[in-house]
Image 1: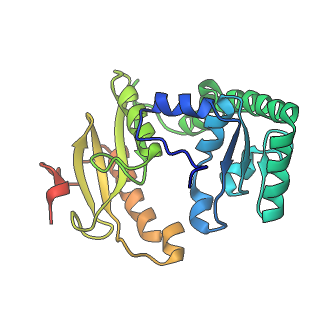
Image 2: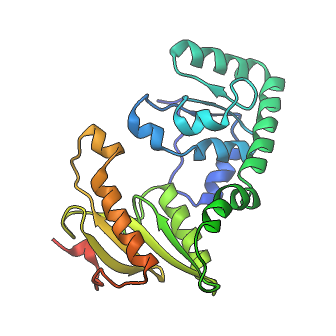
Image 3: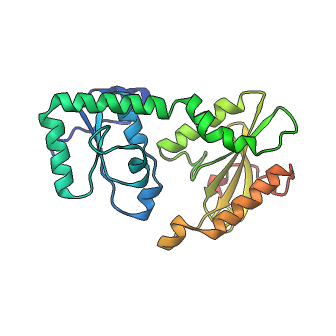
Length: 244
């Protein structure tokens, strides 16, 4: 369609430059259990650039957006028509909403605030035997399956932390059952740190995609292993992507 402009694959910096040229950001997501597990990264990216957003009221968006103040939450067709009509026809309102969203995101997601409000309470409960902070990062995908923007961000953050002497990085992720059996663990090295890959079946029912006790059990096994500093899981060498 001629009214749609497609942008070729680009770096993150180039993507943000393109986004900065936009007037309105939209994030329409179906009312489905999977979408309630998605992040609000599109809202954050737009807001940091002062761009007003209209988003579906999925969990992560509803938690941060105050409807009509720092964004719009739109479920029905009428909701979308009303929100976009205001944003298109009222540039002052659009600019005010974008500025409000930017201030909120800078405040709420500033590294020091995340450290104080989210990480500090967790770390306070962990007994410290030395000055090394052991971190178990969790992401659905991980290298060599670097799929999606969130995966790239996770890998970059883990590399930055792993390069420091006071951090010991580990990763828990999902890998194909062609590599290891369902819910068993295959340990391998990637980007300078240890990765615990759990075999995740391709075909799961709707409930198991969101709440899966087998995944919880596998995660608990890895967590206990790392907490006790045991080497319970065998190291896998070579490129498992080529395994049948």
